[in-house]
Structures are given as C-alpha cells and as structure tokens.
Image (cartoon, rainbow, N blue to C red; front, side):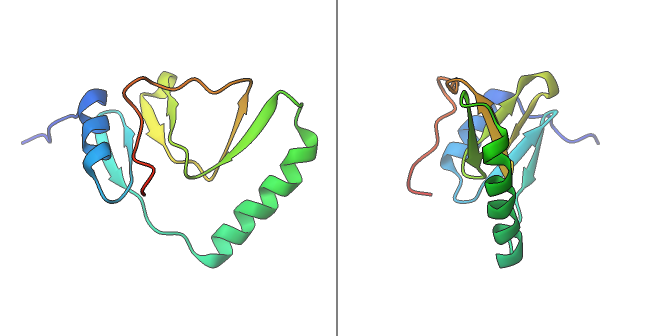
Length: 99
C-alpha cells in the first residue's frame, strides 16, 4: 500500500506542533538529524568565507531558518542560505521561537 502524501498545509501544521524539525519534499516528511561540533564549526567557517564575496543586498542565514524552495516543492533547514533583498515569509509558515 502506498504511503499517504502530505500537503504543504499539513506539513506546516505538523511542524508547528512538533518538538523536533523535519524537512518536507514532494509530500514526504524527513526527520532532521542533529549536528556534530565539527559540522557546526565548518558551517561557521564557510559563512565567514562567503560573506565578503556577496553583494551588500545579500544576507547569510543559518540552519535555524526554514527555507521554501517552491520550484522543488520543498521546505528545508539548509546549513546556510543566502537571500538577496528582503526575505519573503509564507503567511502560515511561522514556527515557534521557543525551539
């Protein structure tokens, strides 16, 4: 029997109520693994190397920001995200600041 496919709205509702983060791709939910100290260190080093290379209109975000990639039908907590200009937030995609 095929597994049920989640809608974007269902994913966002589950994510708001969850104690841990999950990514969403093509109707499937994927639990996120914890990071290691070395992984965290490398992410910071990469951001420090990237920053001087970016135009002033760009900002670097860490993995705490959920990013929607609409062309892929995906929500992800990328290690680093670069956004040019002002971020646009989905009206129902906010998460609790207590996590």
